[in-house]
Image (tube, rainbow, N blue to C red; front, side, top):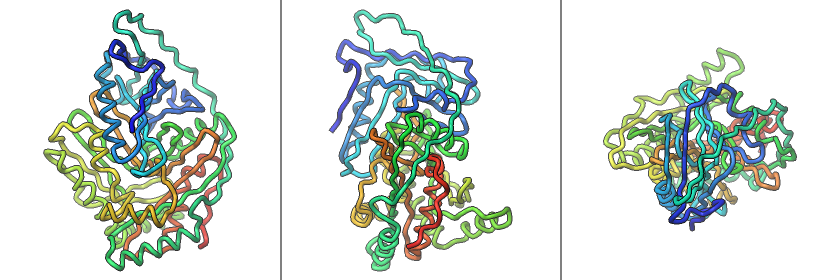
Length: 434
């Protein structure tokens, strides 16, 4: 099912007029966000924000990505684009968030803002997108950017266990290990949720500012109430090149420099984590390779340092061989073994049974796409979905393999909750007790 909403639905005589110009803009991006409906894609202070909403594409079901890609091609075919910057994120773009599961009740969305403010490689730009009648198009409207908002304290949200409390989560992990030992699958990723309530209108902007400050090397994002800071690049397409970063295998940071190095060394030598990581890399290569003329991977996994944990990581880079867009590749690779498991179909069935709740957009693709089909997409991790009524649902999951220990996996989810929990003003989660 596909739904397109717009201030005036694009008809045969209606076109999108898109104008991108360079600007002299040095203020940080986050303070200009709409506090109630932020649109953001940023890493290391560079990226794009969207202001206003011109139109939206909503899809559901097994064909949600293909339907969104088809509708996006139709809309871009109605676009008159004048891009005088020519950098990734300039010109016509849509921010996107895709539901994890085929049967999810959550919609998948592409949102086209009225104004985009971007910054990359030391250059800044503004894009204005309008719906105009081809027969009598008025002159472009002037662009007025909102003034940067003053910095404010993050909101206070108290979180409580959601549909799968800690003791039920460890039971689910134990059951998954039993099934792995019975050779029913090799790996499954099991998640749990925590739930709170947001009472402050400006809270999302403040929460995003904290995520950006604390986790600058991640993709900090906000799309239709889904906010987070993901370390994992699902796929990036830029003028015929494709890249991705696969993460699987996790360890906590050490208490001091020496113990921190020891943690990274142990992770790099961990049979359990290396096996989990290898499955994730094999999955990514198998799904990307058919679309590429060449695809290279890091020779060995490397340890990726984040403020709260270590990951095993592998980078992939290649050349497209079939003209696929970023949305086409999102459709091909999602869900990866890093967030679902191996084999994919059996793992997805186990997730639906053992988790017992709808992940919504958690662990789904989140990012942006432009008029040429290029774009950047991450996996929605370290994230929360904020509903219109203020309900905040945060998610964290772990890859379960043969030698997973339920209590250890539970403790790992606590580590992974930390970025989003602290962004909403709560203290760091204490270790859960089964």
